[in-house]
Length: 244
Image 1: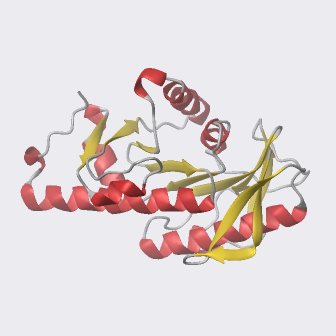
Image 2: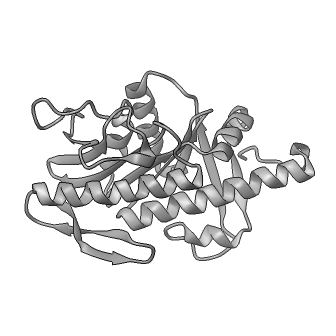
């Protein structure tokens, strides 16, 4: 199953649409995927969510065998060029010789991309996400509930939804972190949904296509700022966010 970007047909603020196709990914599909991620990088840079070389983004070009277009390592996300991407296989290796080095966090993209229905993975480094991930790491995460914006998350239909944002410890051992995330994704009794934070690092979220993943980033980042500003105004002691 292949996720293909069409056309430059556009929707909303100009985000590209990813649809499924049955044939193998083509150079044109990879180019359109790169164009979509370049647009996202510029937008997230303007919001302050992807400064400098932080963050990384990917689009699944094909699920079987897994083939993914990913931002190359060390690229300024506000100024991504057409060649600042690399296509990797299910082992995270570039499919072409002499390709650029993929993001150091490729394994995290792969563990998410292997999930049914995931077509795009986006990772941001915002101020509020970084602060909250540090503040609540000892609790394992924090709750967000009662906000209308929660309805922007896939499958959420009411503001009464209660979303736990899980926080993983930061590490340079990305394969080990990917295995830990994978175990949580497999935990049917306590499903890891929509996204997670890495301590002092940032947000990972995903979606069926570019639009859904982008919307999830916007929803989470809005809510992180709301929680952070509320803490600033009322004091951290007024919120009890331990998972229970």
